[in-house]
Length: 324
Image (cartoon, rainbow, N blue to C red; front, side):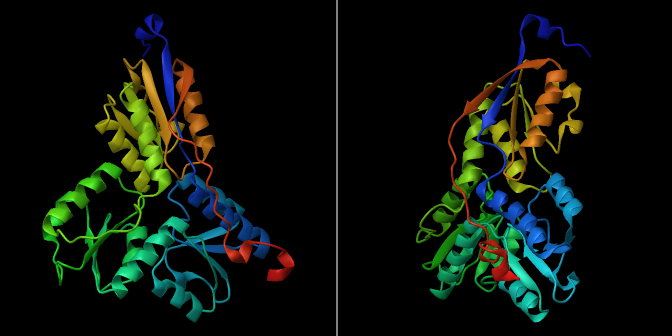
């Protein structure tokens, strides 16, 4: 349906920056690509390397084979562990099966694993704020399963039981809503005044930056489109943050094909952003589709600059002959 409003006020796009790939996702995707180059196809990947369907399909076309569990990988094959991290038992199983394992866990997730081991060794009960069933939560919980209690947001606080209220620590999944996590920690502190936490916030810089960026555009947007897959925690949080920050509406789309023009009836300003596991070409496709729907002007709104780069896993650095 033609939007007559567009003849009176030009339709425009507010494009959030930063958006899309973070350093951990970039490292993980490059890890699979480089492993295929070095060892040849197939290279097996336990779980989705990152939570984005387009990226997974692209890597499959290059020779990656995605499996749910390590025991599905043939003996002696190369297996890559996803950016979300794995429990120690997964490393042990890979060794037992004689697999060549390459760990693409994001270094910021590895930091949370180290904190979990440290708090457990010091006798703390650990309250892990996160979403039940998420791969990152399962990996972190596996570091100290007898010490870690999952707290799934503010509603989960009342159900927590610990051995010693004087020795309680909190950690969090790296891809949560910053505001909701702060609220959850506040409620936990009311229950456990001696609560301690990590030296620095567990929510990763990219998650925080993308949430700040979408807040910058949400209040000025009639509708916000977040590019990301439905199983991406950080992408889903961007929809919630946009709505909380005043967007007239917000939806998650995998790509441009999922945009329903009916969402944009009466919309003059559309906000666009993308989750940390989304390649920029998907955003470009969304901008092109919005252009077809009459959104002719694009204003990029930058709230932070990112320059962090993570080194590839040790097995994939240096001269190929050293790893023949």
